[in-house]
Image (cartoon, rainbow, N blue to C red; front, side, top):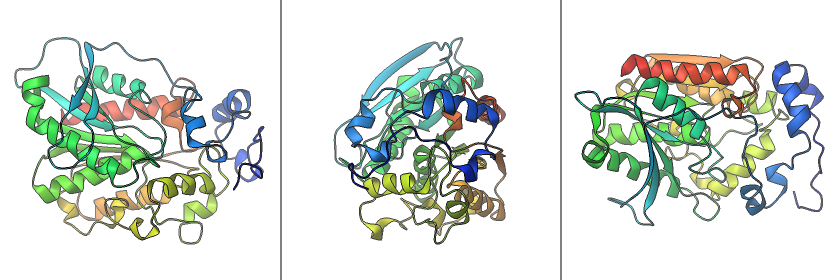
Length: 335
């Protein structure tokens, strides 16, 4: 859609979805989101400069130390990769800190290293682990597979230098992310399986993109929730076409991890969280099913009444706070 023909705010909730949404979300949306310009109706640069990506986030929790580091590449070409490392308060365990490598959401187009600081500080403080948040490159300037390369460089760096620089226990590594970040985290588990290291204790994917071939023609959630709040099908395809401009790449496993043909039985135990009213729901459920059928321990949560971005709205949504707690508990159980 061109800028001239794009609809303008306000954007009332679609009547097909409004009554299915949790009242907490509806109330907040009608007060604070309805008049915000939709990102797929304006230039990328405008969305990046408009402030908070998703309103309604909670407060950061105190941690012992936060530091940004520039890491050198080992396998791919490009600029140094920035990572933000959150270290807990208190005394480091005898064998070192457990670590969670985390990737933010934003459709591989929006978001940055600040986007999910609330999530990262919660994981750090409540699961008592170091959290490494990765500032991967974004499309359209750097389309796929740039983000995959950056994510893997962060994994390699944590494995090679994490013990000496951050005091990590490399026997206790988890990986995860939300939305596009969940996609990258899933790809990392398969790449690590292919390489034989590292061995992840847990994978956590919240509203992840697992199938970049999904459309209203072939996917039940895209059809059912085509006009849902926050991430309608049109908007998801806008993100995809920036990240994956060549349709021939959509089914590549490093873009659509649901299509990996490796030994899924050797993948780490998983927490997969989907939103009931999200176009991405079916592919998240399918990914969890494939893990479970391979014998992997999987906890699948379908968050009732929620659209896609509820985790980032933990300051105003009970569902966001509950899933954030579930993430912390999943890490506590393996660390």
